[in-house]
Length: 51
Image 1 (tube, helix red, strand yellow):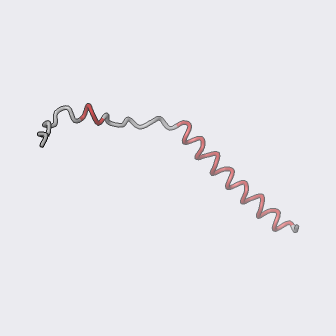
Image 2: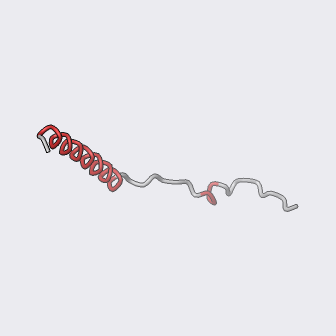
Image 3: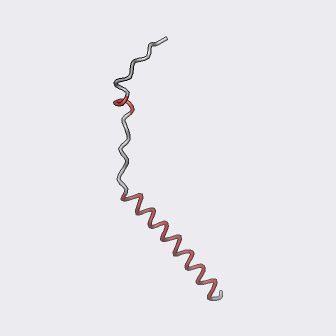
């Protein structure tokens, strides 16, 4: 394997590992989004008539 191929392979692997580590860190450190409770939010809705 010549030096150009080795450099390209190491550079590519380094970039892929860097992206993987960055996004894995983002997933672990991002706080969860507050989702609305569908039952609490619909308390003021009119109750549908049963047919």
